[in-house]
Image (cartoon, rainbow, N blue to C red; front, top):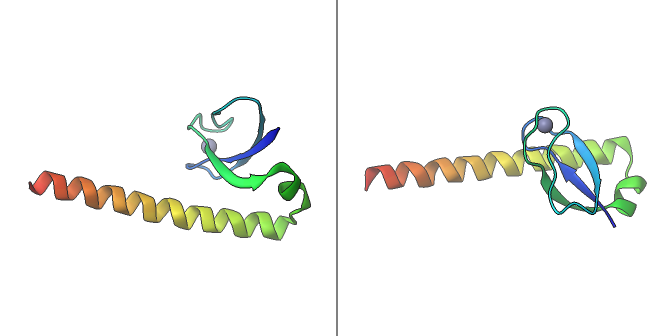
Length: 77
Ligand SMILES: [Zn+2]
């Protein structure tokens, strides 16, 4: 079973087999498991991959903002 992972730092895709988690070849960050399966990924066009990447980048930014807000709130208390 091949899984598509994506890097939260440099946003490169990586196809991983077996390993439950993986790190990025480019920057060494822990990769995020995407919700795309391998068959879907091979069927995707360059444009679709790029669109998915953009959505992922947006999600990561929202996640990061939320985390920072959470930390800021904790510092106040
Ligand atoms: Zn990376």
